[in-house]
Length: 314
Ligand code: NAP
Image (cartoon, rainbow, N blue to C red; front, side, top):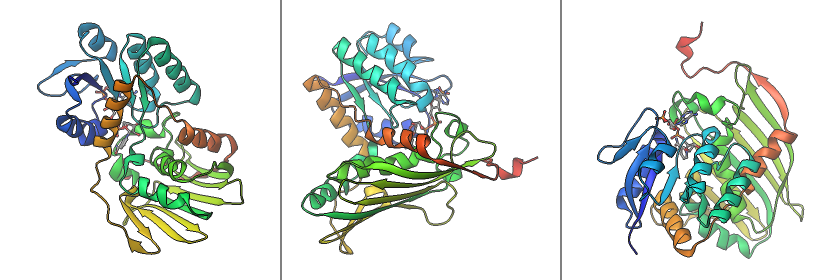
C-alpha cells in the first residue's frame, strides 16, 4: 500500500521530540504538510491552521494533532468533516462529550479516529498485562512524580482550565493501569491540590476500588525535583509486579525482565496505519473518564502560587 499522506498539527515539544522522528522512520506515512500558528517544519508545506492546510492540500489523507487538549476538538472536527483520518495526542480532548462527538463524526464520514495513548506502547505494558491475567490482584500503587518546570517549561496551558495540570502526566499512568488490569476500577476518593493562582491541580491523590476488594492508590505530583518517579507496583496472590520508568522497565518478584527498547511513537503510528487500512477507529475514553471523575469527586486543597520562573515573582 502507498504511504498515507499526513499533515502534522501543533508543532511544539512533543511534535519535535517524538512525532517528527517517528514519521521520518515510518514506511506507512509520508509527512507532506504541517499546520502551526507560530512554527513550521523544514522541507514541507506549512500552514497557519488545520483548515487552511486541508483546503489547500486535498491530497492530505490524514492528520495527527499535537496541540494542547483545549484546542484539539475544533481541528479534529474540521478534519473529520473534510473526510480525513485523525490521530489525537493524549488526552484526546478537554471533555468526554467532545471526544464522543468526534467518534460519531468519524463514523458518519467513513474515516478512522485514533485516540492514542502513548504510554500503552511502552515495552513493559503488554507483558505486564499478560502476567496479570492469570493472577488475583490485591493492591496497585501508582507513583507518578515529575518536575513540571523540567518537562513542561513555560507551558501555561497545562495549568489553565482543560489543561489537566498534574493529570497531563498522570493520565499516562491511568492509561497503563486501565490496560493491564483485567477488571474495571472506579474512583472512590480524591484530593486535588490547586496552586492558588492556577485553574488545574499541581498534585492529586486518588483511591480506586475494584469489584473484588482490589485497591488502587495513585499519587501524582508535579513538584518533584531530583529523581523522577513513574512507577506502578502491583501485589497479587502469586507475586509482585513493578513497572518503572513509565513502563519502559518491568520487574517480576524483583527480577528485571528483558524488554525491547522503547519505541512508543513508532507503535502509535503503526497502529494508526493499521486502523486506516482496516477502516476502523479506536477511541478508549477510560483514562479520561477517571480524570473527569477526579474533578467530580475530588476534595480541593489549596497550595502556594506556582510560577514557572520563581525569579519572576513580584
Ligand atoms: P507544547 O510544547 O506547548 O506544543 C503544543 C503546540 O500546539 C504549541 O507549540 C502551539 O504551536 C500549538 N497550539 C495550538 N493551539 C494552542 C493553544 N491554544 N495553546 C497552546 N498551544 C497551542 O505542548 P506539548 O508538550 O507538545 O504537548 C502537546 C500535547 O502533547 C499535550 O496534549 C500533551 O499532553 C501531549 N504530550 C506531551 C508530551 C511531552 O513530553 N511534552 C509527551 C506526550 C504527549 P503554535 O503556537 O505554533 O500553534
